[in-house]
Length: 296
Image (cartoon, rainbow, N blue to C red):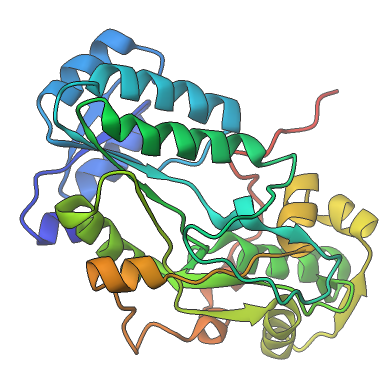
């Protein structure tokens, strides 16, 4: 929507009829193609100036698409924008706070589970030397418009256990950004991002315990500290260990200084988002597309 409002033509790549309806409802153009269909992707890319990867899939699927896109776009002079995420810089703390906070190009040691994404980022950034412009965005916890999954998972914990759960002391946190501020960063990155650059987008941070306590007061139920083992049973392994048992704190000086990005003052209240009735109305927990479902 942000790109459309700025006057850009937007095409959304979809793989089924549900995706088509969603894209069409936004006022964009839908195009159906499989991520593995190089011929279809080549034809689609040829008619666009910029390709934005904003999907969140399993890391091996993500890397295959990145390699395909970079191969197609080499020498074209077009722009490729890759979206990662700050789970890449997360540290498992089992609910403890960590003082570590990373700006865009500060070094860190990625966790084994998410390390392949760092290689994807590097491939994208280095591909700017191959006759195209490449930009990486690494957003933190994205919230806003009442669709943030970790808040939904806090509500799920209340339905499943009678208490809103957090791991350990619950003092760990992810830095966060409102989805509409992130949309502003996409626009800035597309219009004037430097080739090979990585941009963060941070507007604040709230620890999981504060979020759990806010939801609990809203529901009139208690909170409860749980172990990592309990968290994996309650949610799933990825959500428990990479999200609720981890700390991921980031800063965005490059985005602010180079692009002039600045979150709006009326988009800073993550705790207020925790109170939206939409989270109460949902009764079924959905697994994220990048979480492997258990096999029988």
